[in-house]
Image (cartoon, rainbow, N blue to C red):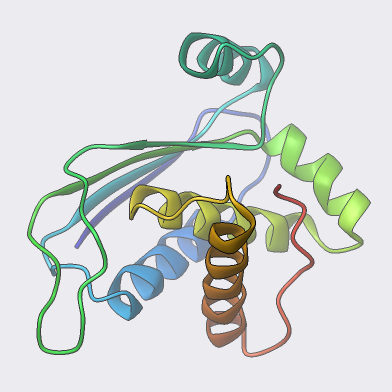
Amino acid sequence: MSIEVNNETDYEIELAAVEKLSRFVLETMFLHPTTEVSIVFLDEAAMSDLHVEWMDLEGPTDVMSFPMDELRPGSLGKPSESGILGDIVICPSVAAAQAKKGGHSFDDEVLLLTTHGLLHLMGFDHEEEEEKTEMFGIQRQLLESFLGRPAPKETVE
């Protein structure tokens, strides 16, 4: 798997942990071993620009996902197709505020948002209540398996 993680902000982010979590999620969801994904941490101005351009919404948001090859989870013995999963952008300042609101660490919020973004790239969504229940349930299971402890409270709606 090719997992590229870049920080274009002044925030200190455990990039190795983000990469390790991403690899864990992709392997657990049975994505092809040659799957590619990129994760970039951006400041509020850059995230605001993307938020307006792609969602027509003002201000920064926590995480945005840009799927490429529309890869979906595979299954044991039958991984997904090979390809580029897509790009995730995360805004650390929004993540820090959400971590404070959720009562957990900044690092946990970054991992939560990374997992959330990866699931969006795999086609999961939370527009409808049933979709939200499924996506957030998978998100929680993945994080708890990775962390070996209860997952942080979801601050992503």
